[in-house]
Amino acid sequence: MVYNEYSSLEFMEKAEKAKEKIQHEINIHKLENSKDSIIDQLENINKDIELMIISKNHSPSYPRMIVDYWDFQSQLGKELLELYELYKELGQ
Image (cartoon, rainbow, N blue to C red; front, side, top):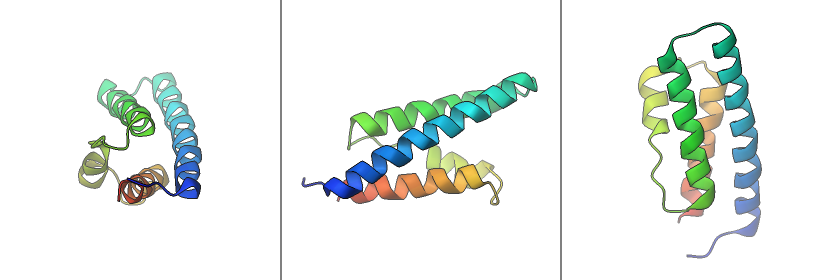
């Protein structure tokens, strides 16, 4: 497969920003003593993104979780779904 260098760089930048935002959310939920399931979800999304950075063949599970369980107005959810769409484009 041939990857567009610009798209790949854009993906890497967005992935790193997403990881930072996820870590920020994890820290907030830990301070608020939120349910462990929320923290687990965020940690699993972070792992998915790390695998997406390493491999163009990874099939992340987080998009389905976001669509099924997250609030449609979640800005982080929207950004993560956009990241997934960009990732899919790289694999084409």
